[in-house]
Image (cartoon, rainbow, N blue to C red):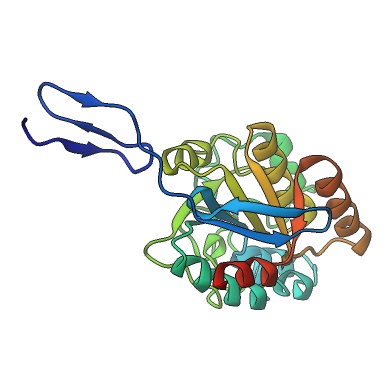
Length: 255
């Protein structure tokens, strides 16, 4: 029989030659771990798991970024950095994909509505989407700019996956869903900022699309008032999935 060639990424790949297309898509062996969440003991399959890190980028987390420029104290957002520094290397070692979902608009803003631009520049004469930051001239929330780059303390690795987003949700008008489906990942660990805004909106859409969602509370943060984080945790537990601590996930992986 002529050699079969792989098309795609296991476990969603086909193998084909001139006469045959094997579309059985053999499943990867299970790698089950168990750890506590705030509501239930969870069992997940590491071969079906990915980590989605939302907006850990300079414009939201760096003292020279856009949020700081408009007067927001970004110190609370930076609280997620240290736990992620511990978590992400261990996830990579366990071969769990890490997806950086950062706000990175088209430079021409052709897909951004006037209403969305108003959120970030309500007077029309401020520093809004695409405008240069006074300190370093980086265009606000623009793809491939310093403003949209992952903060240096975390550092995107070559094996990580980058997805640019243009709304509060990382699924809206982006390839995130297609990438996760091709990777065969159905359980998602969520981290990043702001927990009550872009992280929650992305997690909600993941839930609506049928993904199993776990918010890593210690790896998520917000510059909003504390009651916003409390409401986020409540709503995830109540409606959208589970809330857990990264230390429990890492202990289960190590075991």
